[in-house]
Image (tube, rainbow, N blue to C red; front, side):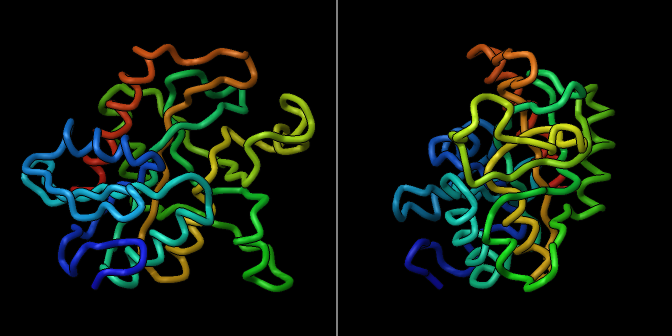
Amino acid sequence: MPTPHNSAQKGDYAEAVLLPGDPLRSKWIAETFLKDARQVNAVRNCLGFTGTWNGKPVSVQATGMGQPSLSIYVHELINEYGIKKLFRVGTAGGLSEQVRVRDLILAQAATTDSGIVKNGFGPYNFAPIADFGLLRLAAEKAEKKGLSAVVGNMLSSDIFYHVEPGLEGYGRLLSHGILGVEMESAALYTLAARFGVKALTICAVSDDLIRNEFMSADERQSSLKDMIALALDVATA
């Protein structure tokens, strides 16, 4: 049934949903990749669409920026619309020598500074992790496609502009194997665990914060297409 944030009806979404942050990227995914795509949500301009990929139903729903916004949409997608598989697709800043601009990060786990995760578990530090089956399948398909994909720990930060300049805001995380930084995955993985569904983040490295290298417009478009095609293959497998 519709919610304050979503006008879709029951059955409007497929069981697998891609979750870009940007509503215009949601529209681009639907128009570029999905066959017979139809819009199912436009509340607050957080656009949602359902279509098919290789003959199988799949949906895409924008979540906005950050963990609070994503948490609203993911909670409702799971509990109101029965979604079983959720895929965050977006960009990330590279924080490791292991990744370069245009690489894909498959987020095995998501470290965070967010109170959304911290405040929900009392004395415990919950470790938000991806669904292993989805992660393994994405890694296998990326290898077969010849994509440069690195599996590891992602940082989901609530802070875009740190008080400390440059890399100093990430402190000891850099020496503990964090591959990149984005703003949503820890909340996604926590909600997936809470409600017994599957989730995976696939991000394209748009900015190499170690080497101060950045994607050109052409590189961004090419990398995003590789990322979305991979996510759709896994979502409909």
